[in-house]
Each structure stands twice: as C-alpha cells, then as structure tokens.
Length: 182
Image 1 (cartoon, rainbow, N blue to C red):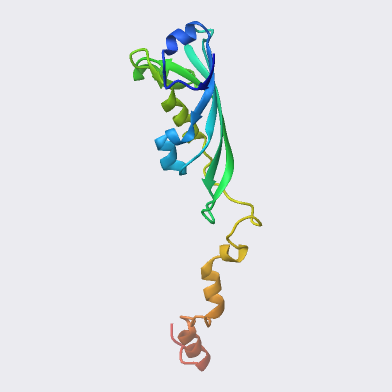
Image 2 (image 1 turned 180 degrees about the vertical axis):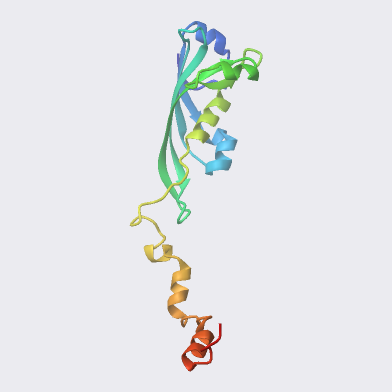
C-alpha cells in the first residue's frame, strides 16, 4: 500500500497476516524528540515498512528509512547536510516480558490494544540512526585549523620555562655542601 503520508496508527497484526507493505513520508518537523536531539528540521523521511510473519511464526516488521537532515558540525556548530539511513527488523510483542524471546536480529516493538504508533517507531529509528559526531571537512569548516590546536601548548611557548624544583639541591650539590652527608 503506497501512501503519501504514513498513517500515524495501524493495526500491525492484521497487516502482518496480509503481508502488507506501507510506504510513505513522515514530516521531520512532526517528530518532537528528533527536533530536541537534532534541531529544527525541514523535509520528510521516506519510510518503507513490510509487515509479515517469519518462518517461526513471529510477527515482524522489516523497515527502511531515509532522510536528508541538517545536523550541527561539532567544531563550528553550523548546520551541514547529512543523509540518515537505517534498515531494521522489529518483532511485535504484546507484553514487555516477551522481548527476551525474540532473536538478536529483532528489536522489540510493543503493540498495545492491537494498535501501533508508527510515528513513534519511525522517530525512534531515526534518533538511533543519527551519527554520533558530524564534522565539516577542514577546508569547508568556519573554524580554522590553527584554532583547533590546544591552547595549553601556545601558553607554554610564551611563558619562560618553569623553575626546576630541584635547582636548590643541584646548587648545594655543586657547591659541595652536601658532600659527606648521607
């Protein structure tokens, strides 16, 4: 089933029984937790969800999402375009205790009252897919390479060398004042 906007709620068990496929868009500015994590976003996330039943009888959702986002460079804090993409397999469960029965390849998704909030699922997957750090290339970044050098090194160059704490002992030793003392 192809839709322009992905529905916010579905009945996933019925979709899995019919091997349905949902494909659509989710407006990034509708996802409040994503906005908190990555800042204001424009555009849409393209989502493909395939509902089905695997060979062991587990109801699952195989999904793929892709979004073009603007994420802050960690050096200059200016926004930069970044493509975020994820492939995932979700195992539908009706109780959190059943999550341990899913194979490692499946992430649990809790279905309450035979309803699933698709926007929350998409938002969770997008947040998990965000890169940990984002940097412009050095030549594109507004922070100059010289500004990235540690300030402590620059301070040491301008300051006179620190006095050696053992200079007094060295002076006593060279004057012979310490000879014969143990």
